[in-house]
Image (cartoon, rainbow, N blue to C red; front, side, top):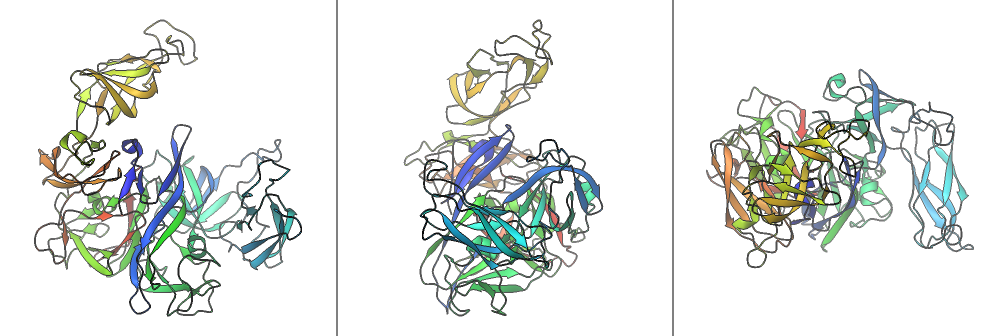
Length: 636
């Protein structure tokens, strides 16, 4: 699967897999939200010879809460009370409804009115859910037509009532709405939820835990790996609570794009059993009405949970090819990779909506050549001793393992590319930059883009440049220096602040010593402290061998290269295959090397590209291997 990135790829590494469309917004200049869809191509098969694919949604479930931790008590997190939006005088409202994160959500179905066009007639209960302590909120999709609110456009509204046993026994349509040309989706609170740490100030950002109970201001977490949660979370740490994917959420409940029918002719979804490190799988299929278990088709499995980070195997029995489309929010925070214990295997996903290298998913920091380091992934020249990785392609599992090359890399190299300037938009040496320089001046003119002065910078238009270490004396809109109270002060007495030039920017070269940051205004008078620098890459550290380079995205394909290593770092990149079609800037992916392929001889295979929406099987050969979770750095 070939990816595409926009010109700001070096800022967010927003690789857009084929068919993946992102909507990007910055909240308060910090947080990145992405909503979009990812299309995964599936080859047709047959009942006797299915086409097998490892896939994952590469999108996170719906976020239902974002807030700060007030207190940690063993495996329970307690949260601050919040203002009541319906009663402004109440600033002490509980943030949660008891039981809402662990109840089984119902399935609801809307019907259009036959006498009032565009309105709803009723909402029926397909399944009543369970475990509710309070009536859940009901959500209805917005109308798909109409232009004037109250005239031909009005969202429908509904409320639920509960039985004494905690199931939904009625849905009251409080407003039938206007502007519905087809029956909208209806859903409610409930279902399995997970909590994820998203605080940027923590080294544990990305850690997630299943919620096993919740009251009005607290949640209790499942702690499978017996971690000390007081070391993971901290007072005022920012967290998110999100819904888990289920088979019904991901593939549809009543109507599915996959082939439905009997267990012999319907497409099958294989998921691992929930026990940690389990090597057994359970198959599910859609019988035309709902998802059921192949082992016992009487078991309705629409609400079967797909754990975060879990991949699945799809057996496509239909003879037609299919582009399977998932929609949702792309994960931008760091995440986790789960290692199975000794003698077990596990399917893990590429959790990000971007292509990743195998060495990105299993970082060298978490590999070791010593079997006694059981929490790490074992590297060895012997495939039968090393922990193995398997990739499924064309119905064949291909086995890889890490032999230990460049295992001591402490900082990965990076470089910047621009669109291909060669024949057919192929990549040339002029389209790559791995440079840096000292900044001696940063302009700060009224309504003028920032101009950077750096003698003999050697840059050309089209590169994204990172500025860092720049500070200045804060100024107002009239460019007078001001103090912390926004009061004008004498030059030299302004408040020292980080320069707004810091960050990653598209540039325009003015001459050999100056370049402009596109659409970035100054906020301070530059302080030449000798710390301000620019770069288009980083040679990294700890490298012993040359590494393989892949150019991904930008609309092109096929470009490859070698990164030349000297004194422990990458000093240059040599293009070995120019590729074609790079009409936008591609991402440069560096392999650590050392991945060997079973049947490939003694030559290291270098690395493997794991597409968005795909996954891997991890096989733990190390007899001392422990079930554990390790950090997976976000590419965004």
